[in-house]
Image 1 (spheres, rainbow, N blue to C red):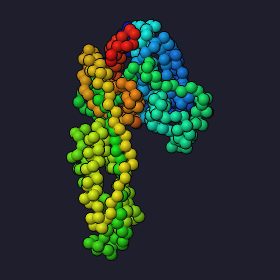
Image 2: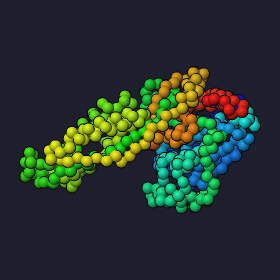
Image 3: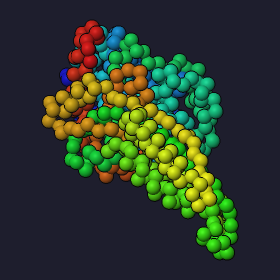
Image 4: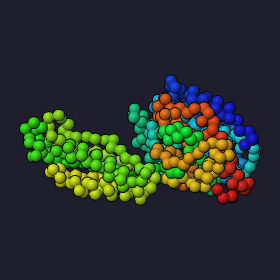
Length: 414
Ligand SMILES: [Zn+2]
């Protein structure tokens, strides 16, 4: 694309990493002073690229191509987790800016434009994917009334203090926004381990959570014979081992599960637990697969209920549906990788992203760059510059190819 400046894009990424810099990473939680400083800088850069850019009433920055009636929407988020990395989110915003600059140099005044977005609070300082959910109409401003950060700050009060309260909200316009493309670091080890330059996300996994509670009887741990105990703790431990086996046997090769919450009551070394509780979480790209896993878990619960005098009950406490990425957009990424000689693989995303929210409304896709050591959400998060450049070339080429597919009037098929 004419006007595409790779060196400037790398310099922009490093410039953004200076705002809120912490050691080798970045501390830029949503609606912190440095988060807004970064958003103001992005806004200025978008304007310099010829876009009509504003920070909206929740902190999302949207830059619109002024003369376009149809647009390819590009971007990600510029907030970070506390003491996080320099690329998570930032890469997608800066790559988007690079395309917008190049496109306005290549096709100034075209009917098809590039809009650039940095969504507020993807990382959930107040509300995970808060910006993209407002943008898509899944949340209203009132839904944030009670939203507070871990340190007790109110979302609404922060907006007021920053002078953002009452500003108009940026909105998805399905007639204008034909597709969304987000570049992101992988945040896992698959690309780096396999030596592949870019990944295209096939879909973003959904999840199910089930709380399983075991009811037994508290007794003296020294005097009560083993045969006479109703040990909720022992039942829970044996169940947890079996649950992982059962879930993985019922799932697909991509399924994952986790038992990350465990508690026993009363929690004393000399008392047989009368109650124990675990939270079982499992994820997959397919809703039917997750339902099959859940049924297998329920069968295991039924089979063990009452054994050893321990009653088991369970409740579903969380469900997020998977989002499939658009196959036509994935084909553009795959072709673009071939054209710039970058190796490529398809892969699911185990983490949530703004593209998951957008993908429920308009065609969306994600391009992943390798993460050194698979690490993220930490100051050690990094990607080799050569890998950033390769991913950037694929992204720019894919965006260009999508823009061309839309045609001069924006009515072309993706
Ligand atoms: Zn992110």
